[in-house]
Length: 457
Image (tube, rainbow, N blue to C red; front, side):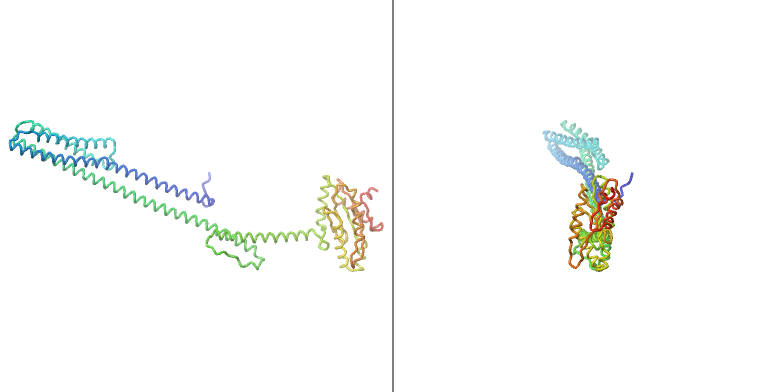
């Protein structure tokens, strides 16, 4: 199994991989923020559902205890005035029961929270509050029992009142202790909540800064990769452009574009290179065409040369073996050496040029005309019926005989012809036509001899 090669990966893979990593980092940041918000929410729930109600309950207890204390003082004043009405006592007992109801709510709230593990800030401090509440409840119950016992009698002595007053003082001290614990608990809860909030914002700020820095680094890295690739491409274009312009001194001044966009500049360089390359291709095609003409055409007459003859005769022999016969006409100018000796070689050359034009004019477009050398020419005539080959040759001989050109002597040609067969080779069919040609010369010139008939005779 091969590992992912980041360096040699495609641009799409690099950008996709880097942004996938960035998205994963951002997703982790969001998940962590959600977790911290959940913790903060739990802390706020504890403050809202436990600590605040406890404070409210204790506040109510303070008011009720204050009313108890005032009622007790009022009861003592009425006793000193020998009042027989027990209503203050009854009111005092009712208030005491209200205090007990508030305490029961507070104790039940703390017991339930501890039992269901809802205290997440500092369970030990809540347990201390619960213990203090239980102690306060015990003292309060004893105090209430003493009140009920005293107030159910007609008379009480000074010691009993002092005892009640002592118990009331103890009850107030426990209330103060309980209030101190609850105040400290609220402060601690507020501290924990505030600390969580600070941690949340600090960590979010750090993660956000990391995400921003990472995003910037990734962006810079991607830009550097793209710019580097563009520069490499431009360097290769410059090298290739120099190689194209090595022989072209007129193109040394390079065209430029006024832009800061690297991609636009690269596009311009590519277009410029493609334009030069197109011109170079066109020039080379023209050169190749000229070279092909030099290789395949006779320089003097413009007809196909001996090289092209070797190529085409082999091809038509192969076609003849597959059922596509052809006829071969070989002709030679009569007394051409005498014309050169009497009129000069430049006249002979011009005569050969005129002869080539006349031959081309009197053959079909599909026929191929060659100058085999000196004053000897050949014509390959693809045809389904080679019986008409003699007629074609005769028309050609007659046209040459009638040809008249100013300042040039008249001329005639001797012709030898041969029709292909499936057993022929390029050498055998040319040999038959060439032998027929020399027979035509030996028999008086300006005539046609069929090599196939002569061979049969």
